Length: 136
Image (cartoon, rainbow, N blue to C red):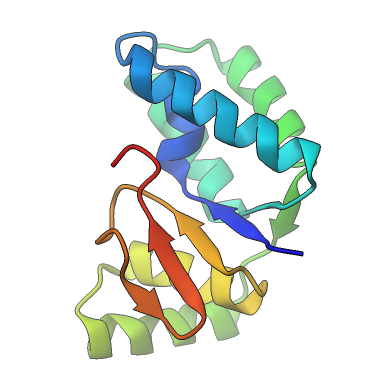
C-alpha cells in the first residue's frame, strides 16, 4: 500500500475559505487518505496546524483541537531525537530548512512514498520519497 505524508499546508487549506481551489483539493486529498487509510502525518504537522489556523485563519481553538483529534486518526508519527538528528543531516546535505528536513526524515521513516507539500520542489526525490505539490 502507498503511504502518503501530509504536510501542514494541506491540513491548513481545509480551513482556508479564501483559497477555494486549494481548499477543495486539500479536502479531497484528506478524504482520500482517510478512505484508503494511506495518510500519515506527524506531531510536528499537528502543532503547526493548530498555530497556523488559530493565528492566521482565526479558527476557534476548540474547533482546531477537534480537527486535530480527527486528523490524528490517520497514521501518526511521533518525532524523536533520531528524527531530529536525521533532519539536521538532511538540512546540511540538501540545504533544506530544518522544519522541511524534519518532514522528509519522518516521512521516510514512516515508509511513505509521497510527501504532499507546497513547500518543497515538486518532483524532488529523497530516496524512495517523492515530493508532490497537490496544488501544482
